[in-house]
Image (cartoon, rainbow, N blue to C red; front, side, top):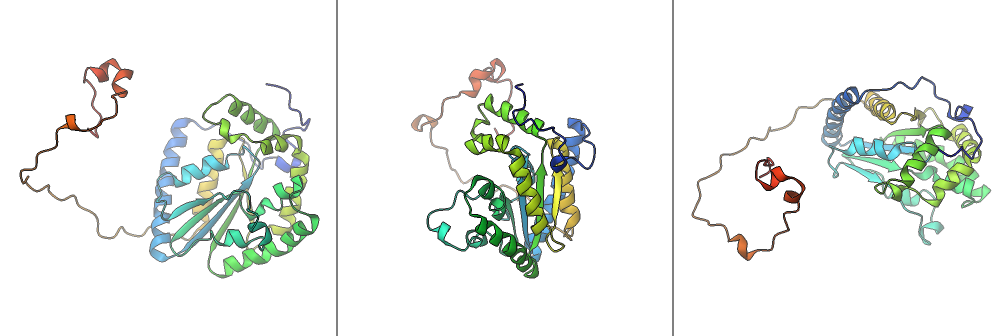
Length: 297
């Protein structure tokens, strides 16, 4: 690996972890993730049945594991209940609006969970460091943000804010791995490169943001993520532990009905229909010989 160009030690105070990073075996990780995802299903049922509203904010360093954590949370949840808000750059019209206005449109209604993959905190981080916002705009945000979040909480929204922290060494390694991975190259952007060369500037911006927005009503929770598996387990466990959800009974359990007898229908000949080529059969001699059958068949 190329030498870290930032010249900053991975254990800078801004990104130091409050506890040791332990290796977790895949077997233990998958077993606990399965259990936590089962609890997320109970949370979803409680949110929907009780008409609760939940907002989860994911912020932090680039390549800190926010997206992977969101994927594991939503993996078995209904997109009608749990949705992701990942807003693009503001349009020309949105730039003339009150800053929080376009985020308000994505807040949950009763029975919904919304996860912000980056949020209104862009103003205090990327926009500030990159000069996309003026100093006066940033200061206005710092004053208004605690009031805005107080309003959300006062209206009954469960607001949780997580900051994913990663050391500069691990971040650099993850960027390098993405460069050589065709499945993840899309994750790299010019802004990621800026996060390398402007490491200290982003650190100072984060520190100032925390001073103004880490409030008793809407506190920040730090998620050290040099270990992605530990970060996911820790964050999801904390989320579940922080919400007053109940394991509500499943209403009216569904029973499979007996299939009624046929009424003489005969399937149309497949020779009259277009079919996709049997590409899967070409991947395995066993499949081509018909020795393996998928349960969906």
